[in-house]
Image (cartoon, rainbow, N blue to C red; front, side):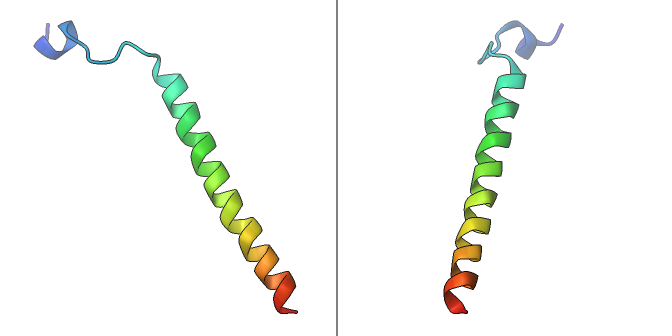
Length: 44
């Protein structure tokens, strides 16, 4: 067995971290889209 497998730094579920990363990225791109839409609306 690998030594790193015996002493794991984080025992949390990877699915939770993946979900949080997805939500943060989604909200970030959504914010960019909303800001761009507002700028486009104001520029008219």
